[in-house]
Image (cartoon, rainbow, N blue to C red; front, top):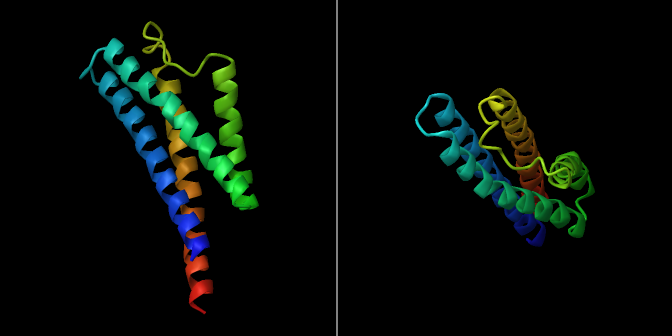
Length: 136
């Protein structure tokens, strides 16, 4: 039962990360179609970037602490990318450059989105396998 609870916590962490990335994509799409101005868009995106980085770091540490080595290895590249962005001070969206980098920012968030979907599928599969093992 404990392992199933761990996979449920992982599932909800991944859902929260997906919500944050989708929110950023929606802000970029609104900016692209001129529904909001660049200042509002960048301030909304910058508000959720650090919570996204922290949640992803906590998830990776969670996998390490619970000894789910394969999932922690899968989280490693995403964590490394986020840490590298943060250390290079390129994690925030600049108001003056947002139009020039709009396609890059959207591609970056889409890659994160599909990577998180990939992790979510693995998490669901492991959750189902854990449930079947405990049922037998």
